[in-house]
Figure 1 (tube, rainbow, N blue to C red):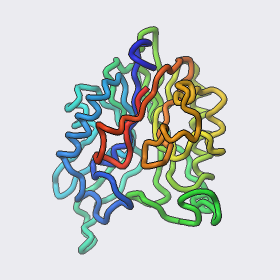
Figure 2 (figure 1 turned 90 degrees about the vertical axis):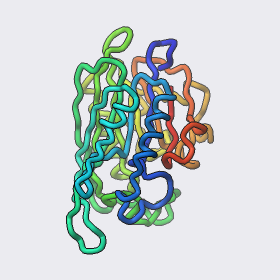
Figure 3 (figure 1 turned 30 degrees about the vertical axis):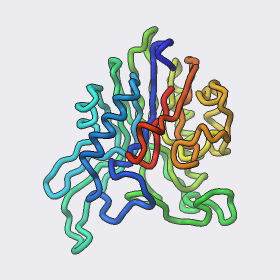
Figure 4 (figure 1 turned 180 degrees about the vertical axis):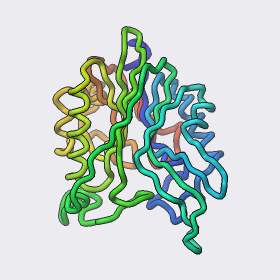
Length: 281
């Protein structure tokens, strides 16, 4: 997964071009900044990746204005976009509750490699008691029933699978963004991702924000068949070099049938554009 082997893959949570900060601001859609989206496009271009996995990508209308982030980033970078969203909601004026628009909230892939096909798969939503971390758990969201998200803890999640023409044949790039709250729900989603990979053999890359460190128990089902690019590069679990969202080590590139030989978190280029930094292998 480097230029030497013919394929460079990146993952980047762009936080819908509203910039860093916690939590999502009220009327967050008013904070979407087209100049920031253009900067994100420049950051993506500087990565020189063949395939880029993007999370927290919106297609929205507000007061009659369309913001189509996958299409706009595709135009800015010259890469071909594919979009996947299973979460949609109205945009309401906080002053009077009047509908002023609508939003699709999901993930996108940008590719310079020819795309053979793409498909979207919804991920499971757990029972209510799996949506929070238990009180006393070693987790920053322990005991919190609602956390930072535009549509709350029950946000629908999905994976986007794109098959591209690699230098020696087809490669499946599987993008996902697992839930941010509730290790029980994350486990269900990681298990669904693992089953999807098992059902379609061949070279594959999983690229995305898994909202957990690679050593987290809820990601165990991904460990058997996938190679962690950080570990292959000599950066073990727990190493702060993996941090891509503050000190959190939650953005991952995992491979099957491909050997990663280098990986980096690109902090300098992306400072201030999102609450995440891009990861490239």
